[in-house]
Length: 342
Image 1 (cartoon, rainbow, N blue to C red):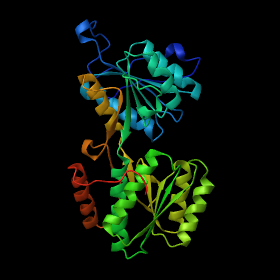
Image 2: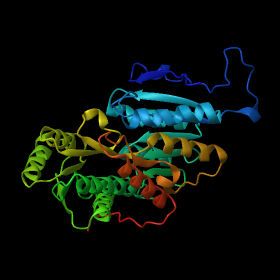
Image 3: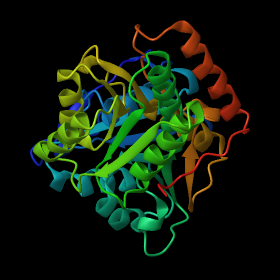
Image 4: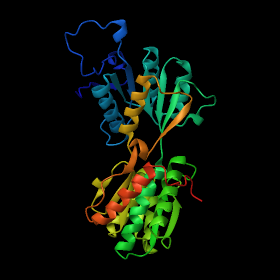
């Protein structure tokens, strides 16, 4: 069962936010729950983009729904109307004694709220524990081995360049150079391209922004003039413009984080983090009592939490099989992939 209730989290709606997303076994006339059957409660606070953002919120909610269906947990989703709602949302779940509270990318808000509720476990998607001045025992950073999906994307790009006899030149555009997330993606991409063909030149360019589209457009256009055959974008909204510039010149683009194949037929693939899987696994372990706080959990290929999105149907099946074989090697721990750009 995937039933759920979602409500806006604004000041006027605060009193109404106790609506529970019931587990599959719950019914309107169900008997009172005994102490031994007290449900495991999971709260999720969305970012401003909302539950149907096609990104981190929607994926996280999918993982929560899966946990509700297969693990019998109870879940509540609280949508936010403004950034000022983040702290109240996280705080309300803490005061109500939820077993686990999950939120994406709320760095300042999580570091403020988590220490106030030491008996409640919090999980921050893409918020590493080193953001805290003092390590809290009731917190886990839900992180990803982005270098693994970047490696697979780079390997595919290199194979396609060789198979199609394109110019041996690839480009990676990152948003902010001191972002560990971007470093992992791009380091993996460069290494993956080189695994396919060491003679392919890979250039890395940093936009120093993830929002200013014109910056990434300019970088992409410069790289296209240099004859690049593939552009890998790890720069948010700014990077989307780079993918568009590549498509306009009928050059392959590679997206990141989520499947960006909807951007058009020139998207070769996407280096994905599977937030839904990571959230499900976090809830599963928390319910089982095996989730240890005070550290990050970095999910990867071995957990089914990173990989490639849809691969263009124009890619020969033989190349796809090679990528699949490489993924199996990564899963088996046979390949060491760099996590920072050299």
